[in-house]
Image 1 (cartoon, helix red, strand yellow):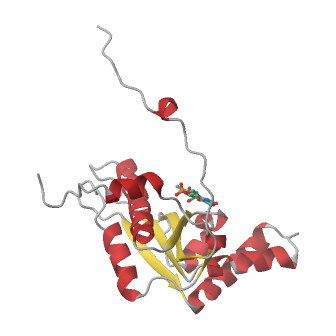
Image 2 (image 1 turned 90 degrees about the horizontal axis):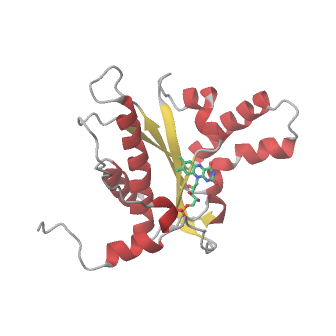
Length: 198
Ligand SMILES: Cc1cc2nc3c(=O)[nH]c(=O)nc-3n(C[C@H](O)[C@H](O)[C@H](O)COP(=O)(O)O)c2cc1C
């Protein structure tokens, strides 16, 4: 057995009880440079068929949250011309709910023998791994897309290629409010065992 297998129960206990802390229940401080790097290095270790690294991580923090927020406000108003100022302001301030936000970008290699679907799945794995990494280090974390993950102007402002997709924004901070437990699916509704019929 590999020395890297954790068998003391800590990891499985954590996985069986962890939950996200909603962005609106966060405050500062967020991870410093060293912890942020650890979180993203964990994200870069995900299963990645063909070693294509089909993901990019963009850190948004400090004043950059307000600068990108201005684009969110303008894009929201463009899509919702009847919006009142309070709604636009809410959109402008979305990224400031947490001190640090990571945009996780799915950047697939097209026409490759590794199916694009598998490359996209790897981005989901990167999001979940960074979520777990951050939570395990004691940070509050939530994986969010909201509307702006799909907005062409927001994507352009982030410097994305036209084919890039945003797998999610990972909001990272500290827990300001303890979350209540969320209902989980029933084991028997999800799990079955295939039996050969012949
Ligand atoms: C791809 C993806 C996008 C999500 N986008 C949102 C979102 O826009 N807003 C939201 O409230 N939750 C969103 N969620 C759900 C939360 O990340 C999370 O599932 C929920 O807060 C409960 O998390 P937990 O099971 O870790 O406690 C998204 C989840 C995934 C996987």
